[in-house]
Image (cartoon, rainbow, N blue to C red; front, side):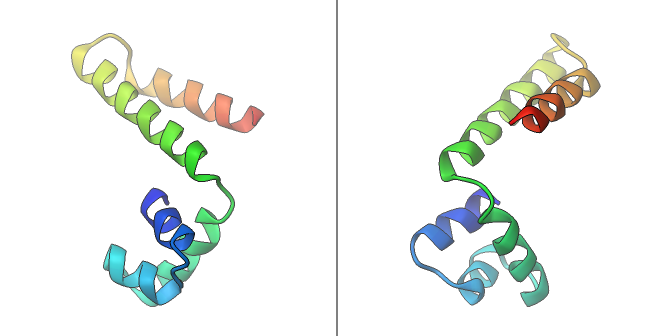
Length: 78
């Protein structure tokens, strides 16, 4: 979604998303539609949070299931 949003923000179209992500046209259309629902800053924040969650799970600081539950809860409140 982050990459698709980047292409769309650069005035790209669905074929540009398809080429950038190397996906089927149907998938590019669906991803583009979903990406339009988010601001770039929001997607970047989610991406950073996923990185933090991954690090925490791999170092044993927090189980991945707990991190995912917290993420979903936070996103649902927005």
